[in-house]
Length: 328
Image (cartoon, rainbow, N blue to C red; front, side, top):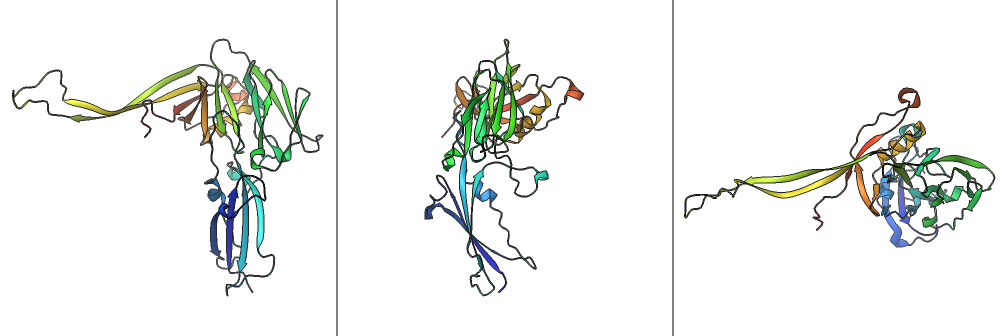
């Protein structure tokens, strides 16, 4: 009999691949075949994304989930088909994305989870490199090896290798410990005048990436309020006091903003800047606090060494909270 209907059971859960329970069943979706099609397609990305949360507090955790899809196929008489039925597939899900040019279901990097080949960090400051543990055997930083182990738990899938202060080169190797997958150069920036700011954002691989801004920073704030006109005339004296204005202000609050400059870097950083602009999870480290921020800049002109000689980006951010605490 011909395929008519598919029923998908979608599980999303933490832990080990076989640790799911009935409470991890998030959706049961029924879909009929369309016209003369021979396949039934399910789009599950946004459904899974509802269960991936981000609570970054400068702690660099693995925000990964197991996704288990069990599909049962039925004919036009609602009888389960006998071939390959049901079909079960299991995936690791992260909150990343592909570009249009990558087409459907692109598999992004399975080793170093950053696009850039150069990292800029302040002198005497350690850094973090996100990696996908399943695809990496070791990370070598200036001839010192760090072995990568993956016990299968979702909290181990994305790992953050500490980059010691003043390091120069990172080499990421396959699980055979011999095949070199990526080489990353580290520029240690000495900035005696300005305070460097660390901005951390969720990049296209679903991993937290640090971007340091080394040059001039400017903070500002914008006030919002409401006003109403009141009656100040006293009925008893048929007069009014001059110190009582006709307009009264209420609902006053403000939003702080900060403008940051990257400092000079090569055009390899363009990919990180682009992913920062596209990120929905961006954080600023300031005064030993991790603060949520939102890029105010909505357009970006990519700079190149040919056109611009020296490449510096100025990016405006808005703090994602009001100045006056009105959390209720």
